[in-house]
Image 1 (cartoon, chains in turn blue, orange):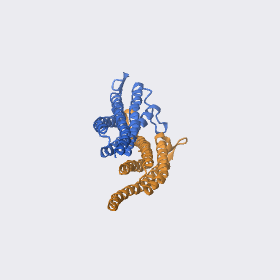
Image 2 (cartoon, rainbow over the protein chains, first blue to last red):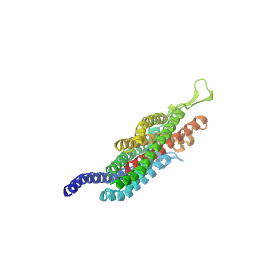
Image 3 (spheres, chains in turn green, yellow):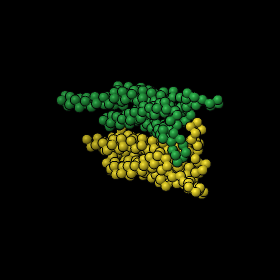
Image 4 (cartoon, helix red, strand yellow):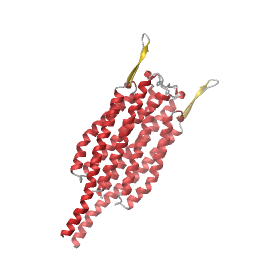
Amino acid sequence: MKGGSVERGEGASPRKGVTRGLSIMDFIFRIIAAVATLASALAMGTTNETLPFATQFIRFRAEFDDLPSFVFFVMANSVVCGYLVLSLILSVFHIVRSKAVNTRILLIFLDTVMLGLLTAAASASASIVYIAHHGNPKANWFAICQQYNNFCERISASLIGSYIAVALLIILILLSVVAISRN
Amino acid sequence: MKGGSVERGEGASPRKGVTRGLSIMDFIFRIIAAVATLASALAMGTTNETLPFATQFIRFRAEFDDLPSFVFFVMANSVVCGYLVLSLILSVFHIVRSKAVNTRILLIFLDTVMLGLLTAAASASASIVYIAHHGNPKANWFAICQQYNNFCERISASLIGSYIAVALLIILILLSVVAISRN
């Protein structure tokens, strides 16, 4: 009897340790992803450029909210950032109680939805950034990046944070699934 | 002893039945999603419109591959459709062996990646469709849908299949996670 219980204890301890390790990685990745989305939202949301010349009636000025896709981008990044910060509570809960299953399923579902939202926002903006850079001669849409150079660099760079967060969310979903399967 | 084994048998049987039910739903949803992405790819890939008038040198013709986002859309939908058809093999395997865990984790990972790919393609196209419909006066991009009416209706409609498949993929991920957690 005694030998059996020691054996079981040895079998459960490293397994629990691995699950706790997964939960700690989950926590760290969530913080990084939250910072990345916050950086993206701020970089895009503060982008504007006024050209150093003007006619009597027109001032040449580009702002991020001239394009609806960029507004969606800022909103989606803010929402995902807020979600990631709130989800840290559950992440800490999983570090403490590594056997929790239902809350992990909830987190996987929400992570998946947020992954969809963030990917949608990043890609919608990326396709607009592409047109801003290269234009489209067939549709008579002209590249605006020759004039608004700083504006374009800024909106292109702000996509990076979003794509980092997308990659991290995919890893987060996988970590949660592995944690559930080990219980 | 006998009573105990009967009890265990009664406890395991409905649980196995539920997991099998989840696997069958998984199979059906995969077929629907595959058909939806195939329909999207075909609808977008066969879209073109030639206007019934021409100058001596120019024929007014719009094709889906005039816009890089639409080419990406067709490719992504084809890839996801191919993946969904191949994944039916694993789905059948899960109906037969409802206790399998590792293959389910593999499927969740691939489903998540495909969800990202499909959402990216659908949203990139949606933002271009929006500009085609409404244009953007700030960037001097004009709406092309006044001229190419049929073309625009077709590309807008082809997005529907993709978004149905995105919703189904989210449900598929959730089904697999629930199936794993019940083992």
